[in-house]
Amino acid sequence: MHDLDLIDLSGPLADAILETTESPIVILSPDGSIARFNKASETLTGYSAAEAIGRKVWDFLIVDEEIDAVRGVFEQTFAADIPTHFTNYWKTKDARRRHLKWSNKTLLNKNGDVTNILATGIDITDIESTERRLSEVQFELLHMSRLSTLGEIATSIAHELNQPLTAAASLIGAVSLTLKKKSNGELCPQIELLDDAVDEIRRASEIMHQMRDFVRKHKTTRTPHDVNKIVEEASAIALIGADAQKIKVTTNLGNNIGEAPLDRIQIQQVVINLIRNAIDAMKESPERRLTISTQRNDGMIAIKVEDTGSGIPEELKTRLFEPFVTSKDDGLGVGLSISKSIIDAHQGEISATNLNSGGCIFTCKVPAGGHDQLDDNS
Ligand SMILES: Nc1ncnc2c1ncn2[C@@H]1O[C@H](COP(=O)(O)OP(=O)(O)OP(=O)(O)O)[C@@H](O)[C@H]1O
Ligand SMILES: [Mg+2]
Image (tube, rainbow, N blue to C red; front, side, top):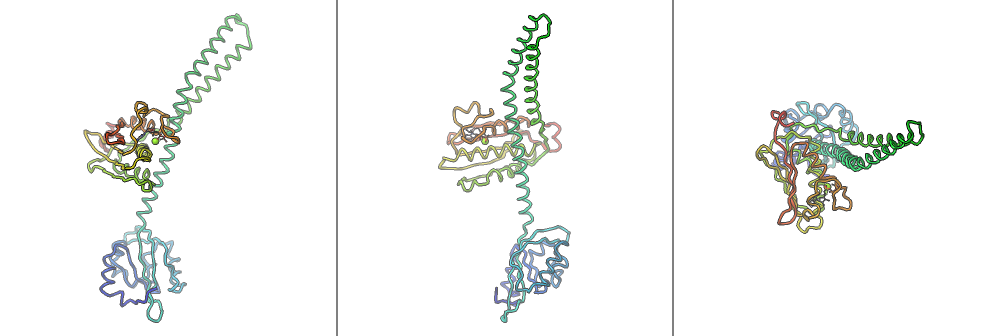
């Protein structure tokens, strides 16, 4: 607690602090009425200091559902016991809701009586909505990446098993045909069993194809998106923990990039996989630099992820975008094959080049285009 009174708080130093800080600061009387309302509070709420001073906070600033609680704090609590920290919602003059986090100090006079409460706020509305947005994107991506992985596995299994199943069905069919010929049209239980076996094999093959089609059904929905924004959001998620791994990240987003018709979640999935791969590749590198950039050229937008890692192993170079190709103990090896399917579906291209300086660069190119060009591109 401070041995100050309002006279000190009206001095030139207090004035300078109150009027230059970007934090809303409100000085309240013990009964909850406003004694000072600084410039940042005016900007935040749209009320001038002249409009605010003398009024109780709950009369015009607190959102309806919190009025009773805030009034209760002032009317039923000794001013000295007002909590030092809390958050609440304010309504602005133009009826917007802002979420504020307050730190409070009670100010005492020489006799130890509370003269005022100094409340310093932080507007956390935007921070919260960014955090919410990021966790929504993270959730969508997780869901989508599970589906894609499942799709890739289902497609591979269907592809691998189709041939032996078809071969088995024809072999059994041939045996059944031979028996039928030999039996001269007489009913024979072995033939029936063989025909049932062929039906079962066909059913297994159908189930596999249905499973593949089911996961593939998640169609790409492309709408014009600001490419830089998509890359920024994906990077924020992919780079969680990068600091701890001492990775120096440079983001170089061109300022004339504009929009492209994209499935946002799918493209973010690609960017995240490229960044994660780059981070993995730099684990053993003494120098860990990651550069994420965007460029626009000849109607195409390029997203590039460059690292100073190990480079792509020679033996993987030709199979890099095939499923189940991995050099990692815990890798599935589906990231790049999913990325290639996604970029192909966007009529784009993805490529990788090892750099002479060590490390490698992945480039994804997609056709640019906003609302007006969408029909041409989709
Ligand atoms: N930036 C990179 N530098 C060096 N090698 C890379 C890089 N990106 C990919 N690779 C190589 O390509 C392989 C395949 O990558 P891909 O993303 O498809 O699968 P993964 O990362 O191994 O597993 P996951 O399915 O979890 O993504 C990696 O295992 C790695 O050997
Ligand atoms: Mg990967």
